[in-house]
Length: 106
Image (cartoon, rainbow, N blue to C red):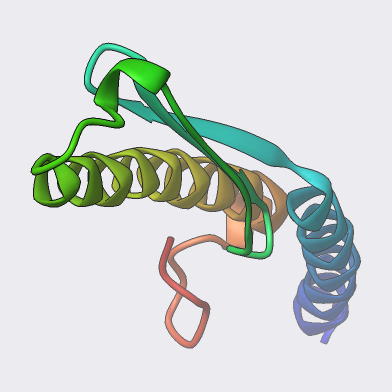
């Protein structure tokens, strides 16, 4: 029974750490870029886009499709960063319980 008690304590500690990691993640601000920095997307840890910056050189008639593609690529860059940081934080919070059956996969 001592092992079960120890496991329960570890699970409770992990749950607290996961909550802290989630709060930290929500406070993150990530910058995704495309086109050598001509398009930048600022993404909060919640996944919300808070800003899109487009270099003036891209504001040319007939280039709307390219600009749209660059915005999508910049968002994808920021989202990859967010996913990587999220997995890193959650795996760290899960500690020795990460990967056990019934635990979330990161």
